[in-house]
Image (cartoon, rainbow, N blue to C red; front, side, top):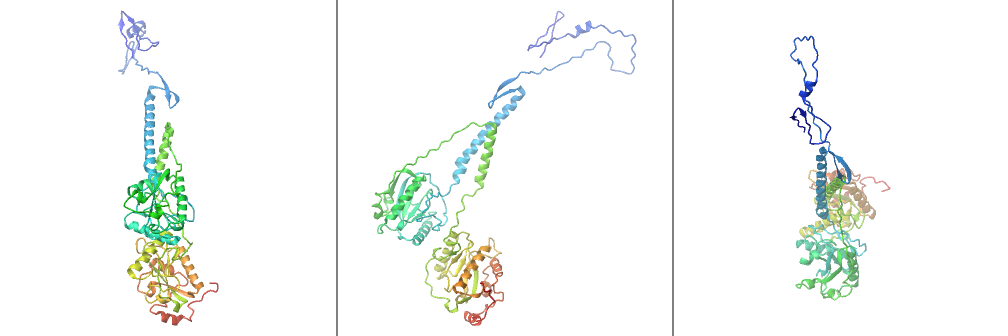
Length: 535
């Protein structure tokens, strides 16, 4: 800012900053300029005329050109005062980006990732080790995971039937799980179970909170010997394979290197589990002290503006991924056979049959029905559904599951009563027909109805071809729906429309209203249709 004053006719210039400028007095300049010589001056119709000297004051704003030097994120920068706000905004953005990125990382590590836990597969691939899928375990109602590694192993026994054969032990596993579910334990109680001949079964699993020893469940792996070892005698393979299991658990970080092994009765004085015959063996080879110390460390690095933006994008992408992914992995659908499942394979209850179809074999009639029950798309689910269905018929109806064979939504054929056994599927025709039940509700008008798949149709044709080959069915047998010969809505519109396209479907409805004797007498020597020789 400039300021001027008069002092004895002299001009003084002052400035707050050094500059080679001077302030000139307008009156001094006017007296120094000679007056112009004007002889004649004609002015007409003009109001903007000035005669004599005229001075115009010019005000000039001189911008402060002061510069600032400094470093920003390691770079040498030169900026003016006007750039200060931009620099401040960038710094604020970087700070907020780091804060948000840190919060997202904390959420990802401590919230999102820990919630995505799954049952640990310990990688034990032995013929005597059976995972949950191998013994057809039902899905748990609730799962809680352990904080690994744990310091204890607690041994108990089931105080139930002893078993030393694979399928008998599988039956015991299913019985134990059902008993524990009825007791509202959410799943089978122990983490692992040991049967005779060294069969070891995955119960809840290695990293799942057990339900066998009360308050110690969160700090121990529970192992149950199947049987009552107050009377039953353990065998050497049980302890040999148990030692292998414990070694694997230490190796996988489930057990601490200095874990301790105790009997159930040593931590709960109200029980004698696992029985004296097991307790006498616990002092021999079981306690082990192996090393397993794992330490994790984390480091924090300084982030630049670009790095902060990248971290934000990565964190958001990871959180979105873990938010939309399913909490369960799809388990492998393993079955004892590719498509033909025997009664023993799906653990059917034994039943003594007294009525057979010998008098009318080879049979010429196959009746298709649907069970109007839940669908099943995996072997374990179909086997469980058949066991439930069989249990209902035996307990409530007084007879075994009514079909000769069943077809699951997984495309497998499950033996029910089997060949030559009289079914209970279609009143009046059971003695002279074979019944096939499709699991599910195939009524197209119902919500969530089942749909017939090509695999189901192909596998059904395979079992029918087996019947022809073994002499249980005539080469020219015919297929009908239950509604064709009885007062029923079965097999449902979807399945009914499918079988009507089969080449051996009875479009003439030959059998309705006839008894088995009449059908046999009328068609025993009469070909129903011409069968190609290569079939």
